[in-house]
Image (cartoon, rainbow, N blue to C red):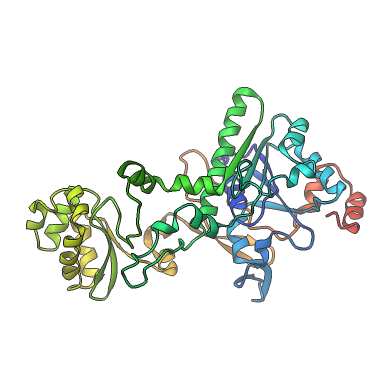
Length: 406
């Protein structure tokens, strides 16, 4: 079965995480992604280690885990965009691509003659996506941004972490660069939407994606809690601000998570813990009442869950249809039978390491396959191949290499 985007070619000028995450999604969907990297150095994330990918003899390669996590399925070429020849090669490549993806500071590519206005004159069907911290307009548009900064500025850290009056209280960042990753997903979605629109109009589109915009959008229910309730959302640890009981519970030998997402599940939970009267108590009979009276409900549940080990509780809760689970470490995630069944971990052939582990794209289709035949590339691994496709002969390529253009 053909991948869904097997007819699409992407020129990826982005680096680090949000942009490369978007282009990896497009590559998984079958697009031919040509990743442009700096000669001799490559994407910054190649050096972000340890750990580094190891070669067949067990020695470190030049590729850090960050790079290996975000660049599957791409072809790597090296190209110095600061040189006129490098800029001309980008323009030549753009004549035959469907998408350009970039995450340079606002105005940088315009100064190099590689912005949407310039490249769309060469290829009017071009979909051009810019990923930045603050977008192309506004008072902070020219400023750099990182995931940690946007988690703080965008309100995420204000609602993440334990309450100030409890041990470990204070704002926390999420344990993965969630804004970068979510921005990559939105960028890929915007690109696919623009490609779909192109089938109707025959013309390309400019897509402007800002990390701060993405994070503000991700506030979701917490934003609406404020906009409708007129109360500033606070950190609640693992407890959900709108659904109870939904939090971590300490058992006799460790922690579990319980999610009673509706009143029927709460009734079932009360049966499991041997307290059916709680379900009819007017303080706890509905979710709204349980949220309002959480401070009195929590100690009752805490005392009961502490009496038995995790496995006992999880078995009983599963039989009663109450969603619950252990708090898995990363190794435990990849040992989970459901994760194994879904094939979320694959090992792809690699020219230096032999094989490289990859956490797979979560999308599954009934009539199409993801593309899983290309590991994260070596720096410049496909430079000659791509330039040959562009019509350059070996002598011209060698001359460009001698002048450090590639």
